[in-house]
Image (cartoon, rainbow, N blue to C red; front, side, top):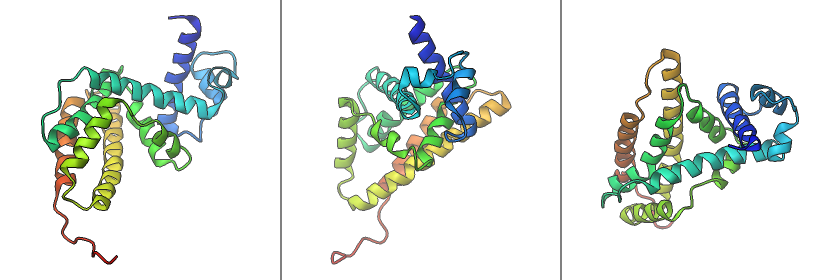
Length: 208
């Protein structure tokens, strides 16, 4: 790895840990540089153009790693469960391959729940052909349900998954245990399938 790439990676790793531990707003760029062992206190600006560029680079790294994992998976089972597994399991594989302890899930949770950083997360969504095909397939399988209900459930599920994985990661660090991400993934896939596929007990009125 070239020196500049190594410095960039060290800054990303340090920022991910610090943001996970304390939140994005509480950590200065200078502290990120110091934690990365970089004597240039303006290193974040030099390598990423500032805080927003650093956050975008962190999100891009995660999305790229998830996409790479998805490319190596076998075709999804022809079902709602299969589509959801194809969307969720690659993220679990990425988390499972990170050094222990890891901070990725907690960093992503902070970004999702901070109104200032939510647009960066939305912008960094996986738009690879595999991901888009899975989303289109899932939407088609759920077309018998009110699309607004499905969209609302999807937003809720995103927050639930983010909070759950952050808690698993924090507990694993605290207890010094294996987070067992494959099992977490299986649990989440089953739960998401049930929640998305559930019937709507009170459909919207047509005149609303």
